[in-house]
Length: 213
Image (cartoon, rainbow, N blue to C red; front, side):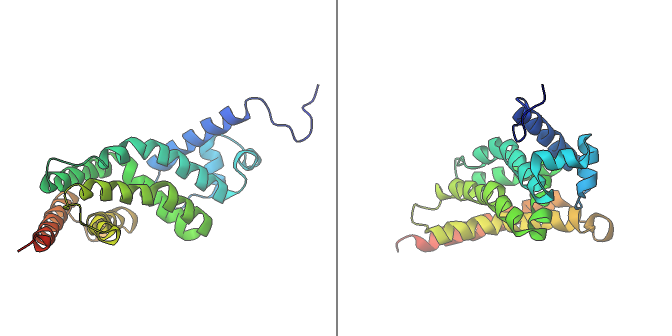
């Protein structure tokens, strides 16, 4: 007996989730460039109409993949939010975790995918912002807040997080997304460590400036 029109198969959600996970794996291993709808269908081992059946259009696929990538990044983001024993350790620990994320590819590539897709489509950009970028920044704010004397405002905490996060992300974009590894290579390990040291020095000076005379 044929399935009534408009009713989904009982295993629809399971198949959709499995396809999303497979495509997320593909995205994390593929070259850093925008992938066409046809390429996504091929990578998932399905026809384009099947991909549309589960996700709608290309933007729908991208938004769902960002959800999957955010779920995978959740343990890392949770760990980032934990403060260190002191400010220096908190910054160094974040730098080390970020270097591991670049070395293993997952977390850095998730942000690269979000940026590529988000710049191309406003709705996908909002998904990236909500699902991955904001949680990443807020976790770093929480990590730093414990060491900023309890007097830092929300604006100051955001500025402190951006001081560390933004140049590291730009360095990765420079190398991985814009071809810097070939045309203008840099030692990301040393750059990240230098950025961490500069951020710690700046935050430490700011901390001391808030102390009563």
